[in-house]
Length: 196
Image (cartoon, rainbow, N blue to C red):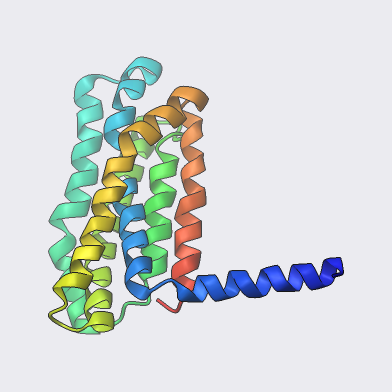
């Protein structure tokens, strides 16, 4: 077997395996990624206090901005999704959420850090209604099983945050959060390639 034949065989097998991933598994992966990104602040808050000299109150305001963007505006985005019936922004919402989560480690000022936290939250607020509509469209309106798989994805994402982010920042400093761009754009690419 030549190198080219080996490469072609590996490429065919990888494509086959990629196409075998179910839509609900992809949705769960996206939910894991977004809920991971939405929860990166708590493990890095001590670094913001110790390394950047922010007060505990200032750091708490970052979490408030992220949570307000994510939670309070979700019904607004949900109503917009209901009216438009479009879910094409799903990959972009994952990428943007991850982008601003990664930027939390490199913003040069408190106000830019606050803006990144808010924008990360807003992207998460866009994702959740879009993904819920997408799961229902794929699996049927009353698919409790599909929604459960989707929910578990989010829980897995949240559970991975503390050790992953603390380990990453502990080893590489706050700039290590830039590594979050890899899953952000990787998961967004998977969604786009699979037609979400």
